[in-house]
Image (cartoon, rainbow, N blue to C red; front, top):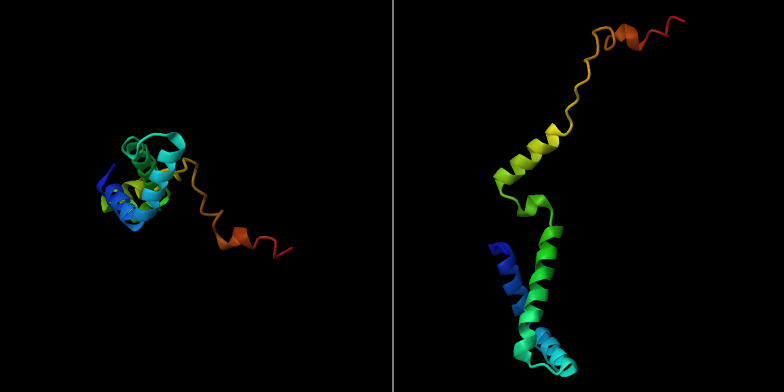
Length: 102
């Protein structure tokens, strides 16, 4: 988990500390396991959910300038065509308006 995800996880846990404690207590009650046993599982779930949130963020919000440049290069390279260029006549005014004289 990278630093951004760890920071997001800490912020999430701090913002929802009471709810997380309630969930832990409910899970302890319905599974007859101690909160100490349940907490690592709940932490793993929260960690995965934070990672999923990060995956959904747009590239420009999470990537370094180098990663953005690489992504842009790959995107432009995917649009290369190896077809012949149009002739001068094909792009000339005469070819575009050839039916006007008819």
